Image 1: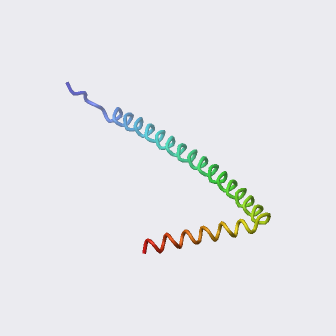
Image 2 (image 1 turned 45 degrees about the vertical axis):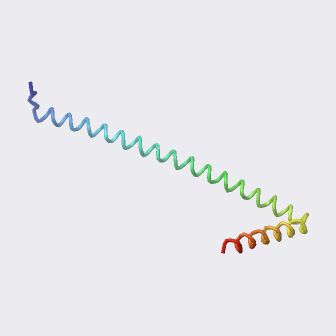
Image 3 (image 1 turned 60 degrees about the vertical axis):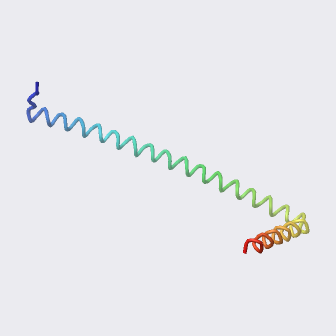
Length: 87
C-alpha cells in the first residue's frame, strides 16, 4: 500500500521539484521582462505622439492666435459657470 522511499529517492524527487520551480521562476522573470519592454515601447510611442500633438497645436496657435484666444476664453467662461453652479 505505501511505498518506502529511500533517502536517495527523496533527494531525487526534491531535486526534480527544485528544477521545476527554477524553471517556473525563470519563465515568470522572462514574462515580466517582456512586459516591461512592451510597456516602455508603448510609453515612448505615447510620448512621441504627445510631442507631435504639441507641435501641431503650437503651429496652429501661431497661425490663428485670435481663434485660440477665443476658444480659451469660452472654455474659461464655461468652467467658471459650471463651478459657480456647483458651489
